[in-house]
Amino acid sequence: MSRVAPTLGTKFLYVLCILFSIFLIYTDLKLKWFGDIKNLYHSVIISTKYVIKTTTIKPFTYLYQTSIDKNELINENKKLKLELDKSYISNFIISQDSKFFADDEAIKYFLDLNNLKEVFYLAKLKYFDYEMYLCCNKHRILIEVSGDENFIGSVVINKDGIIGQIINENSLSEVLLLTDVNHVMPIVSGNQFCNARGSGKPGIITCSYNNKLWLNQVFIDQEFLSSGMGGIYPKDLLIGRVGEIRQVDENVTEFDINLISSPETTNVFGVFKGL
Image 1: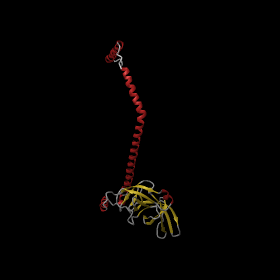
Image 2: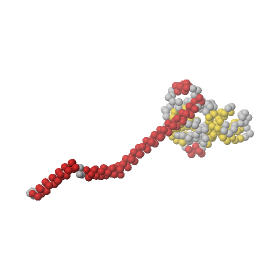
Image 3: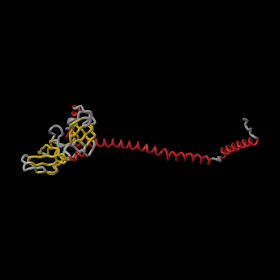
Image 4: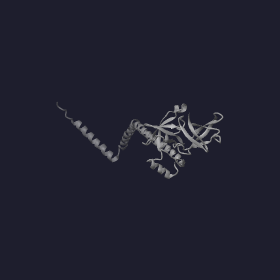
């Protein structure tokens, strides 16, 4: 199959187009005639890319980054909250240091004797049956203690005071709260001593005494402290204040003590091993 050879007119047109192109390139280089057009072209290209990126890529990038930042912020807040709760417990111990230990040497002796690194172990609340706490006699919580020791019998506190003691350990530690009806704690106020028993009601323990044996009657808002008897709880820690007083019979008076500490106020606790 033969090809059609270009005619003289076609050749002339090709040459003319080449010369015109050279002329345009030369004038653009020398006189910048097409600078505005090129700038407009580049501007349109850049604007188009920006719009496409803004409407398609950036929203997904923003959502992804926001999700990461939010998770980091939540984790950071959890860490700060944990440190804050730990500082509250530390402040409580510092404010009551003479009740836990006589002096710094006593603290050192206690740690060395029991081969411990910390004065107290931090624990997190893992389970709290709040409905049972409100309605029934069994008041328990489950906590996770940051240590691999045997904590049975250890005292559990929060930023306000004593919460109870650990009575059982599996994967979590079971805490018998002061308000549980099976819990008994020796308390004292001046020369008045009694074994306070859990009432089965939130925030209340009860005591009773024989009117013929106690020289002075109890009064509303009278403060009762831990006696230290029994070797479980430290001595002279404020437990609560007298609330309702009831005359059971002519010889026996019963009264409630409103506790200053509650398991409801925090999710972080301190555990003392072998006080």
